[in-house]
Image (tube, rainbow, N blue to C red; front, top):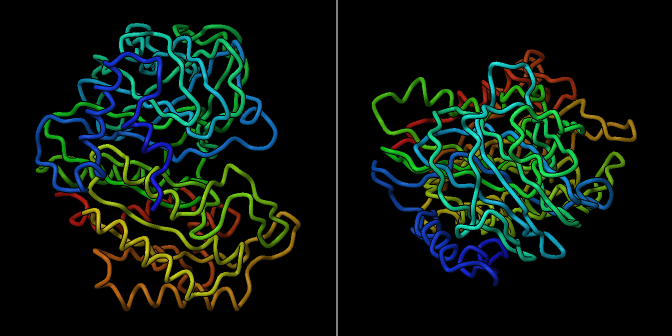
Length: 441
């Protein structure tokens, strides 16, 4: 397997940064599942992943393509586990040139005001990289900030604000955030009131890849490696009802006697096992860069480099069916291969069955479901159920989401309206289907 640019960048820090940055990144590498082989992390004070996003190349047009110039971006992330210190990962993995960061901060939201752009003034903390408040992210690199003293609780939102003084060009980003982000002119990274952020988007984390925390009783983290169901396409914006979010909420309520792992959701809308984002699909689907690369090529970037991860929940394949009409044999072979590669690194692997999608319409108004595609989905699910011994666990998402009277369809109570993506209640049902004893040690 080729080592991704992101994985290399953590070991080989780009030129122009102080040696302290190298030391910081090497510490991060020592705590990752890849460096540690996905082995056991005993409950102790350690760095763990609290939040992550699967990033991709910017699209062919729009802000993700053009980027920012003398502008600031403010982004909210919904963390899982909390800790006494924070460090932030910024990524230029898919950039076409170096990107200058003039100023960056992390803060807690100001819950006393209704404006989501507002942050708690007392919590605004400047991020530095090798001691410098400004720095350059070389093309293809990802950089890890110095640790900062900011105590955050479990299930805590954090606000990351970044000022780009010069043209960034093509961005590295995550599109389907289901979370507002904002931008405005000039350096607004310290702006607690957020009044200068004049452009509101219902999408997108730009150049932001992860947040780690230093935690007592650290218990590693769990990666959700999925598609738009994990990305939360069927939930309300800013609701944080993605099933990985609700999985962490469930662990908080159930796992009181053990250390709590973080949940890192690197799911990506439109993700496929064996196809690229730009590949077209049925129903007039044109394909977009934001959908990212095939799953095989994402392992180093989105799985093996995440901090202190010990388990992976793999839920991919439905897009290969409805978009590309792949055979059951090819989908099963891809899932088995991914399982083998992840398990040989020492991770626990849980694999999800594929949910129903009868009624899903393409962008051109035609149906993309067919009896033949349904037969493929059923064949994949039958294989997973009858070959459970190949995996550490099989999570039967299909069983909990389907309509008992019409199993090729989502249950009406769980349907967000497009007949493939579950609503908040459906996401809760998915979270409740995950066997906690397989991911909490």
